[in-house]
Image (tube, rainbow, N blue to C red; front, top):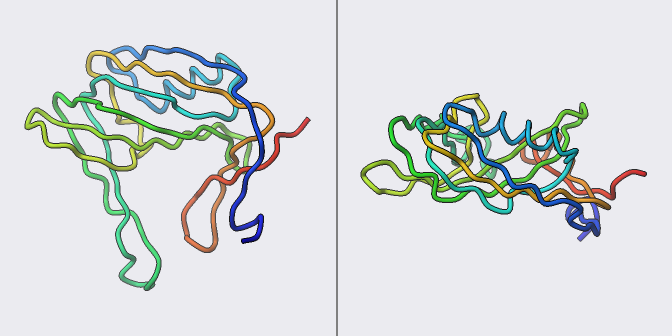
Length: 163
């Protein structure tokens, strides 16, 4: 496999930041704020739990127009009392140098049935009571997100961090 097909670079955890997100705040905006406040430009969500009052969740499905490719389904909008069971995520910069956050999660409504997928960054993943997060920042390597011609998605690739 070529380095282009499987990107990697050695890195170290250079910072661990603990955060609490208050009611009404959007998860994505809050994670970006925490990262900006603590100088994290590349990292990952080590853990996140809490509750939401609204969430937009998407999942991939086969592309009906292009065999072998996938597209995102329309977002599933969840509202009400939502348990945020777990969230995993990647933090990096996009090809314009803006902070980019990619979150996947498992959630459940009051029926206690889990819903899992990619949380859509539309400003509507709002905290109900609290969300607690642990973020690890990286040094030596970084995630950079850009459009991927092969898949048609905006994806992260890994590269050694600049000086």
